[in-house]
Length: 76
Image 1: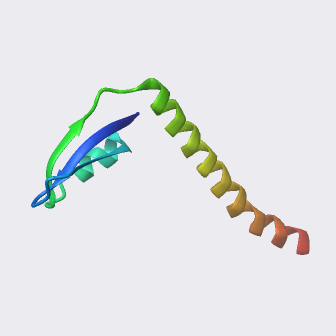
Image 2 (image 1 turned 90 degrees about the vertical axis):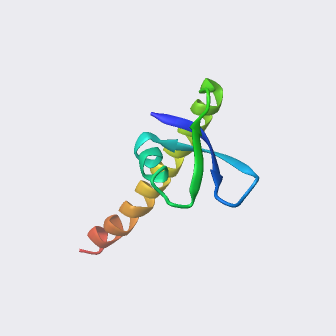
């Protein structure tokens, strides 16, 4: 599950937003530099867009990681 969150650092007036998984959220909120961390209302369109982007990144990383192994296998 991915959440859109808003966070604010200590000694800063500006807030930021990003997407993170639940485990990232749990770790992020423990950082000593974070003053506020809020899960915003989920926007399904943005969530789908983010999930698609992440899947493309994972697919690309997987394709790149196996190409070297495939090339070595072809040489043998």
